[in-house]
Picture 1 (cartoon, rainbow, N blue to C red):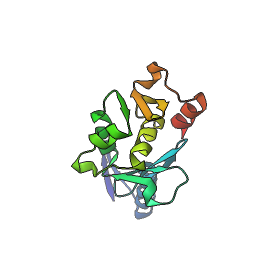
Picture 2: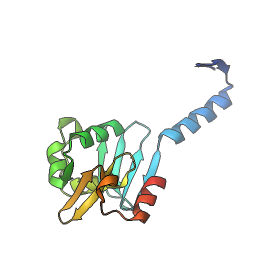
Picture 3: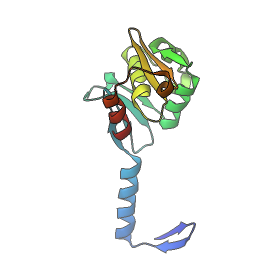
Picture 4: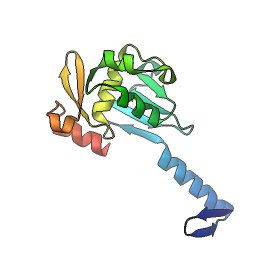
Length: 148
């Protein structure tokens, strides 16, 4: 197999190409657990947000890809709750209802790709720009989110 890269072509044996494929798949897929939520990049490119330590599909929301989740986040107001998540979801995202809306509020607060923190538990509310807003995540929760 010939692999074309910016620095030139590289010839790989079938065995080396298989190892490279496996390593790339492992790098691009996998589950990352946070404090209360988990995110999974699947081999088909989809991204699933689930409750940590939950196996039921009722505790998960699947997106076409991670970028779809980012687009949902971008549509949210600076301060948002579960109702705002439900309203911001568009046809491409599928409906987001019930406990999945709360799950997404928590996931946005826990995942280091999203700059927001929880600011209230009742109702569950987050604020974008959380690191500057003094949100309610503890140092332990922030550490778990950044290393999880």
